[in-house]
Length: 412
Ligand SMILES: Cc1ncc(COP(=O)(O)O)c(C=O)c1O
Image (cartoon, rainbow, N blue to C red):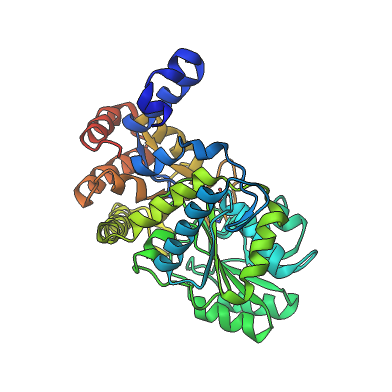
């Protein structure tokens, strides 16, 4: 029996301050709607693993090869998570220890590029991620990065990728992004990488759930290494994961531990195992279909209302709105949305003239509201709100609609 079952008010009695903060977060999530593309609401079963006593266990190393005694349970949990991950994605090897997507990428780059190695990835301002070689990330400090962007149509410029790889001769080419709404042609990336003897790393942090459900193309079987977070569309606990071919699995494992991490967070690994179990069920595919349908509907409706959507739509769960010409910045709309009860995030659009804390864009995503049971009818209501906010309507007039929608669609 865990503490919560035996004594539900334990935290409140022992530490009222922390309990109050956590209760406030419960209220915040219950009474607002999350349209942040990188967030989701995990199941109660996933969250329960975080309270397990396994949180107290050190388990440096890997199953059957630990540097601590008493790891038989940690071994069982990690083996289960690995087996489910490999089944879910059809991968030859899985490392479920990365604490986050950033540490997964760092370890993968350490394994494949080596010290001071050369890497090529998509720039943050065009939709890539910090950990793909941004100058302020360890991946931009420890490696020599060059960055590619998108064309004026908002799609990856494969000619630029090819030219960069030819000129920079990287050990690793990275495909994937944080604000990229279109499918990625992993085979085209692989062909470019192969031509120059580079490894291909695909970072599927965002579309991992859609890929697991078979709704968008998978890089597994094409890329040498696939990294991801487990908490976005995949709807697991916060964390990272690395899939790879058998050939590079050993190098990956040693780059994770001892290369870039110490003891794994076994309670998070247990949560990953639960989430992968959920993702292997048919209901998960139905959920991901709704995520995708809702995002397509959201993009179509926003365009219909006269807003500009980067690349003209979406193939996944992300809709990147270009606010240029509306008189609003990304920061303006983020703040106005919050006042209405919508959590959204400002985001750079390609060639954005505004700085990252302001931006000309808004990144919207459907995973969290779809988990709460939203369909296209509810998306229509959200569109009315977002469009109204962009047009300068008073956010206060939408607060009660958001509250009603939130109450009608409780958190899992
Ligand atoms: C493509 C991509 N890679 C890596 C990460 C990093 O994940 P984390 O925040 O867990 O370090 C993110 C997070 O948003 C991401 O979008």
